[in-house]
Image (cartoon, rainbow, N blue to C red; front, side, top):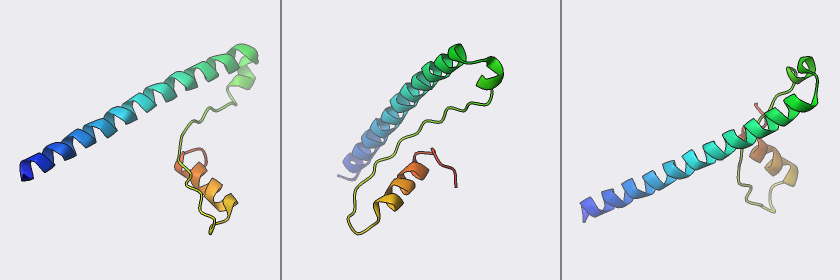
Length: 83
């Protein structure tokens, strides 16, 4: 039975890693498209001042915590805001 539990853990870890890899590829593709669109629409000197930051987080609403605090925390988790 112990071996079976370890196999389940390995399978679930592999699934999580595969999901992260897919998310990373999607993030890279979207970032590339946004960067290309900005580069094509503004002067290059201005383009160099732009940054493109993408991240994600799940916000689980809690009525006992101010919404602003929850949003700020989710933005920090998504790497959109660096503390």
